[in-house]
Amino acid sequence: MQNSLNRQAAVFKSDAVFIDGKTPYYQSRLLNEYGIRHAFFTRIGGVSEGVFESLNFAEGIGEIRDSEEKVLLNYDIAAKCFGLSARDVCRTYQTHTSVVVFADEAKRGVGIVKPKFDFGVDGLVTSEKDLLLSVRTADCVPVLLCDKNKTVCAAVHAGWRGTVGGITKNAVEMMVGLGVAKNDILVAIGPCIGKCCYEVGGEVRDEFLAVDPEYAAFFTPKGEKFMLDLNKANEEILIGAGIPYQNISRLDLCTKCNEEHFFSHRRSGTSRGTMSAFICL
Ligand SMILES: [Zn+2]
Image (tube, rainbow, N blue to C red; front, side, top):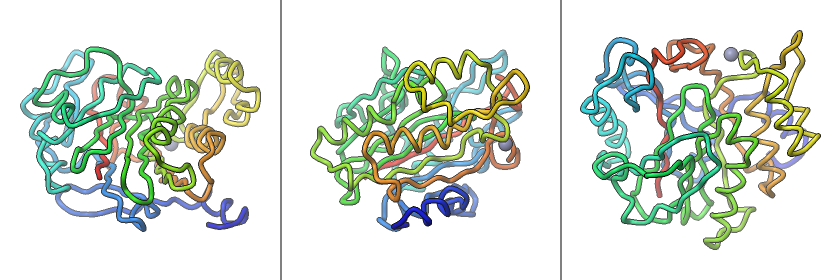
């Protein structure tokens, strides 16, 4: 992916690698080339039941809740794929902010075996070895970042609010502040709701245009509504933040279209589980 022709190819061809097994997950081909430890888990391979079946990472926000115990077991199952345990996870406290926090050693286990963050945190950055960063999604965009030398990594939860609020850019800036060059930062944009399924109102488009009129390119009109392309939005915002396009990998998997593999808020409302993406050094 060295020239603009190849960039076109990258846009149309998914960079996803499917790792099949008892607990299957997706990876980014690009991040794999550099041996970066990461995974976008599916809904398969966990212990939760009913609407949370089965690899669910949140207790839920609807009338039906999953048990804390099962969520913890699911974290253990996922962490084992990294040779780690749930105690090594640091978990965001997602409230659709653009807040990114540096996770030092003291943050190991936060939201799992230690109290959760007491303020909204939608992105995490770390330079600690074997500290497993977790962001959870069910249509929103999980974005994983790491430098080529594997000295700093980050995990970001970007719904439309986080995307327009520049949360991925905030993560990049924190990584740069820790001594990483932008040219060395690799990014994987994980499974999320695709432009095929993500219909939004004009008020969402207005918020994007208020930041940059060029963001109109992320929207395709459909009657009085618009189809929003969150993959493209995050990719373009990262390029705008100085990340070379060949460093950005898109899995291009729609969570709403792929019911077998993914939970989707647009498909199921609050009666659903939540997936998690992980990265660590
Ligand atoms: Zn779709």
